[in-house]
Length: 121
View 1: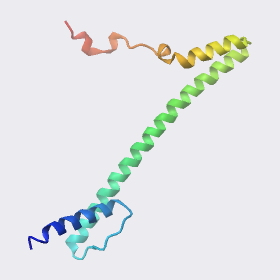
View 2: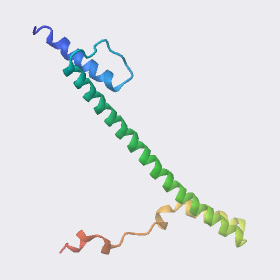
View 3: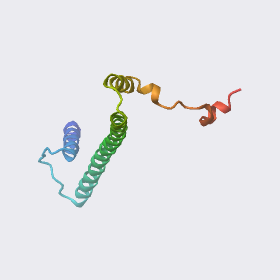
View 4: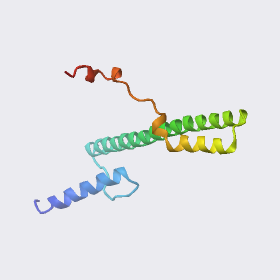
């Protein structure tokens, strides 16, 4: 029976992998204990996959929101330039500055907003 042990582990691992992927396997649950274990593994796989998809969806939504805010700001700047008849040369310089100096336009963090700095001697 000890000679069969590596094969059992390999079969078990193979079966577990097929529960998370669309692959197939000839091993099927027969007893009630095996069926309960199969359902538990399937539910864990469903939970793991759902969590992964949810995380990706949340990140993509955040990225879209961030890009939408940036695009709205650029569109507002272009409208301002157009409505105030700013020369073409100056408008190009403004747009170039905005695109290349994004870090300068971000507000700096003030020391009053960081409580740990207040504790320093």
